[in-house]
Length: 288
Image 1 (cartoon, rainbow, N blue to C red):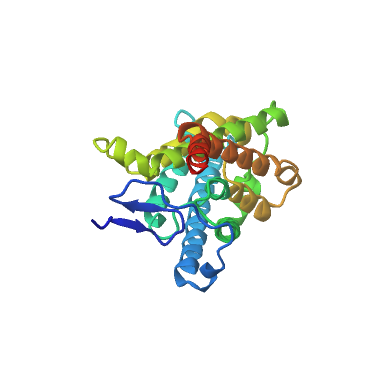
Image 2: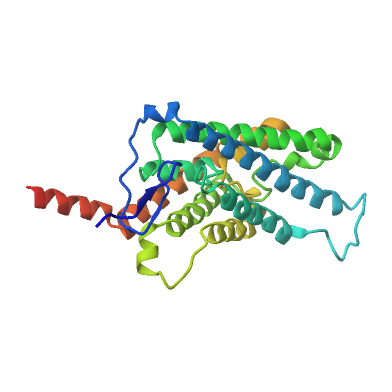
């Protein structure tokens, strides 16, 4: 009887009625470079990251303008959207954009997510590198649009750049980024796990929803520490356009932390929860 298996265009995404794991993506897949679906996915990642930075950085700057005690543009008892509103902006945009782009590019919108999926052999090395480039370029353009439309506010209120906040050392900031990204990437793996549909078919899961909530919750916890990166493209794009010394001095935290957190999440899900190493060992013994 034929199996109803569909391997999606975005390299590593998987759907269908057969809940077995899809085959691992090849390390180097040069054939992708000749496929329109590959370039369509790059465009989707670029535009999604651009929109993500545009909306979220505007939200951050708007909040700072509203709560400026000199301008006093809002009732002091209100305080604008607040940290809760900023967290909702980040989480809500991720929910929307992952929902819109999941069927085209996989909806990564974050180099750390792409890196984690690459380590788990969900995407090829070529796709991972090109996704990261598209995401970083999209982030730069998104912040560029914000500065173009509101240059004075952008420069005066920090440009949405991630920086280690006063009172916290670099170790604390790095730890916050590692743990925050672990939460996000672990959620991505869990929400898109093909085995979940087989085990928990009575529990419907709309993957973008828990991913968006993960971003929301991590922002609530780490905005006071680092402004919350957990997305190297988001931090890099803001730093490029804002271009101040403090943002560049702390930039390494927003690359090392997310990449380490993503690697730990990929290892935990694939080799601890999914027991990939034990399965591989068992297969080796049976073949021997």
